[in-house]
Length: 241
Image (cartoon, rainbow, N blue to C red; front, side):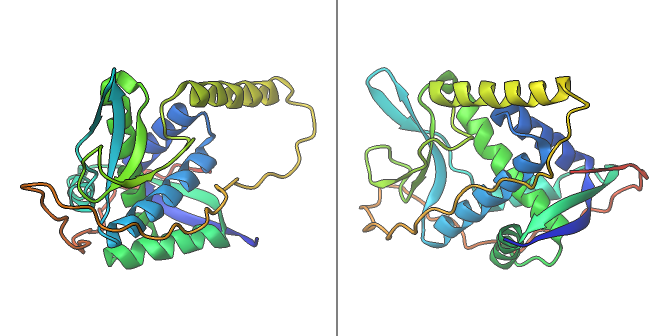
């Protein structure tokens, strides 16, 4: 897999979300960003097939779903960012897979800017994490792609995804943080060159038959093209991601 260097002007909002994703997953900043791009690409791909992105949770013997993560609502959140936001120059490594994620997101949302695509992907990922954290106090909460937002209808569940809140993920998150802490405690040990670890591509799942729609169920609007570049105030700061 080829690796390229990339420089992009992100918003201080983007950096805050990257840090929040890193704290939630135990990943470093670079892997947190790549994970968000991968997840957004997957969510938009399912959306094209008529599936919503939601969170499936259990409460005792009952199962439920949170509100869906709508691309339109995420776009509106992105467009509502403060115009006084500071810019941050970020130097990052971009693999060919990362480029594909960006191209897919830009194509789905009819946008041209890499920075806007990254900002949208981060907002999309954060909206999903927020639902995971609030669903039944984070117990047995999993990402769920559904056509009706009905927990008893068929859909696709992401298993062991780093965003999920489960006992297994808590152990894996703790292990990642411990490993990173050990690296920081041995500053003089030569460090091999590292590249962002991207999630392994999953085999494409054949689309399931559409379940019967619930009474009053609404269809998601087509992918919106209302994302707009946000003018940022130059801060002059930057870092390697």
